[in-house]
Length: 615
Image (cartoon, rainbow, N blue to C red; front, side, top):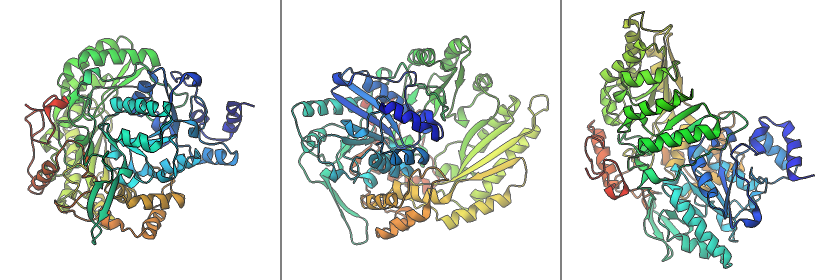
């Protein structure tokens, strides 16, 4: 019986078996005898989430464009299939070949969310690969990690050999080429790591020593070898029109979270919202030309058979030629009956023309991120939208027949008062009034306003990295205050689980000592923590206590401007002095102009290809 036949029989006993067998349209199968470097791209969450991720699609195709490289996919199995693997003595495998991961040269994880960290450890163990980097002595497999969470990689430093900072399209191939050279001459892991440290964007954590002050704060982070630079700079793709983009996607046999084609239209953000990590770590703002976007849209739809395409970005409507782009895309999508999805819309540039385009896509509802309920607090976070713009946008939507509006807010923002919490309810009721003021012949049926609140999590490389997170008790009090203030049955409130936010804050701002807590929590059975049905906060608390770590020290403590941060040896191009100045302005409720209006001196050099940099 072949490995595939054995696995197929076992899949009859698990949910969504199509997650675990491969063979999808567009998947790449190569002759192993002709391959120099095998790379397993591991997404530390379930298939449904990982297969929706654009970054994985890009890097999968990028590596497989090279004849001598073979990139395969692997995902975190759900607990039912994990047990099947254990009971039947089957190591975790890659979907294209069904070969165990320990046969690969490189194992790559993308760290998209802090609560996926223990999944990395589970996947390594299931693959029969030593979890701790110090226990992996051979050249293969090298364990690497990239993604947004790598802007503070320290809580995962005990497990990862190499972190990739910034954008991966170029550095991944450079790293694999280097590995191929070292492998062919029979070199060692240590030799490879020393050579890799010379590549811009590569961070080898074992090459750095960390010391601490008596009060637990960081004292020093310094290299312990001449090959390691004192500061590691992230990689940036300056020529965005020529950046690699796949002409095919792997098309799943089962439903996934975002079951459609996705085209990246821009990267970075001009807005500078002070809470938003992505808005800073993905700078500078770059965009693709209309012709490139049109060609990629057409190619993907024809190859995959999807009848919906989503334009991906942090703020799609900030494309400098958004109106022309939508008009020209419509010439193709309307003709081919392809729906065009436009997520990440801004309230302050939501026009009637844009509404007309949206009406051909969906009419179920619109989603807007107001973030704060009062103008003062919106100025604190530099959201740069006014109440009149919010109400005007909702009026336009209601006149266009929309009957559902979703509003996102955060609780526990810096300087927040009870007045700001009550402002959320007041704004929701004003939007409700706008609906009833809309002529009946224009508006749709019964109105539904959904108000969703999440607990603010201070993140590295933002102006709020110095701020404490509100305590769970304070968030609970604020949620109850908001519930009392919402009077209409047509306004529905949903809140975010506080415990996950506490852990997210700890892992986001943690230092190298937190690797011990991650390991200890994993040993207690913590995995798939991003899913409520699996999350067990009590085990995490026990793990922190057993490691002598205080959650409040990481989550609820204000940091001084001169404190050394666990990520200060990493350069994401936005300067710390800029973040400090933005934090000071936040406490004065002063806003900062966006990049389009003029440079604010964040530190990005115009040589990195930013549309507005240097102007």
